[in-house]
Length: 544
Image (cartoon, rainbow, N blue to C red; front, side, top):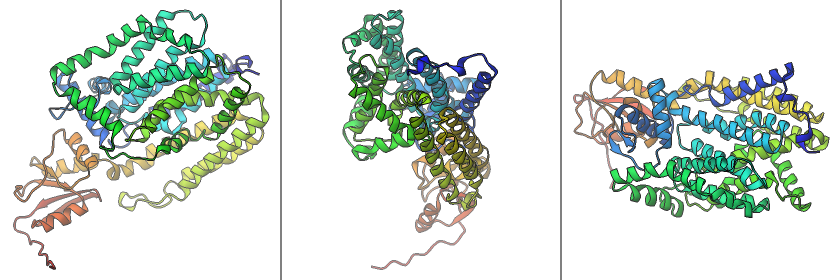
């Protein structure tokens, strides 16, 4: 039985449907938008990207990305444009920096919902509305001030625009779909670079080949597609190259070709790295992957793949995983473009299970198993004493997950897979809400430079702030929050300066002959000190 033939209760106007829409709204809000400011910018990328966007909003140069006044040409412009608009609207905050990714995830959800409704029907659509936002990879990258989610969004829009051209024998509105596809690929190139053309083109060809619609794939590359692509993508590249003669060398060669072909950026991982990452990113819906692979095998065995939207989607899962598996630099976010198509496939298989009790039980019990594994992790999670987080601080969340595990196991054993999805999605959303309201603010001093920057500004009281021996994540974070580049401490630094270092840095400064006064220990990675010219120096005895 095809799920298009089943009643789409979630999309009707009944009271039950309104309650289900309320659940969708709650899950989407908590997973994608809530807690965007619960902790400061983390890692080396978030503070740099946010600083560039903030400078763009303040300085008015919307062509050349600049980090503290210097041209920074490693990434294209799309994230900076969207975040700069956020800074203009919402002021200087983490909300402006992270909102592009949250909006991108919501846009992806709308595009996928249209695809699911068009090619599968109501049950797949209603399940997708819960599966997509509550997948671990989506809710993590939806709150990250990076380019990954926007890139994934643009490719999802390209996939949705191309699907009718490839899968339908006589689609209506060919021109509109071509324009949409070309514009989406143009945005992908503005989000990440040439990889947007490679992934979109390979996704089209592979999906069309798997769906036995290769001749129809030629419709995608029509004049309207090419014109829309050129209109969206080329102006910025031409302007940036004209304003920055080094652009082609820095961006295209160093940060695209070299990153892909060589391990110069030290992100080496084994070839199979993205397999486990994809499975983890799909949690808590990982159990449905087995049913999806089984359904794909049956489709191929029965030779039912001609014109199959599922086979078309499979191409968009395989291509990003295979492409980035060949890269010499691998990061978890690289697999994100495979997530939209993968979640639609999972939602479709779960929808088919509504009329297949054995499959429904397997998916339900498997989902309970994944929730149970996450619950165990929270029960045994260590504390972070320096941040005031004692062992067992998240045990209450473990209890919630344990209760959800039992409930989903019961519902799954009864074959009530729709209820399993609802309970699991709500549990993930509420768990994330609790983390954002209770744990993340307490961990903030340990994971971001936000608190350290505030303390350094207060301790300096108008004098100079410097850094010494910090990991680049902390240095970039401090520079973002203090809104300027921070020089490194040396032995000639004026004694009035406040130096932000770490515990190892304190010892090294003493070995350099400085008398160090500790002003404040924010965390092991952020210690505020001042050199005391009248204090005692550390005397080292060295053995030959």
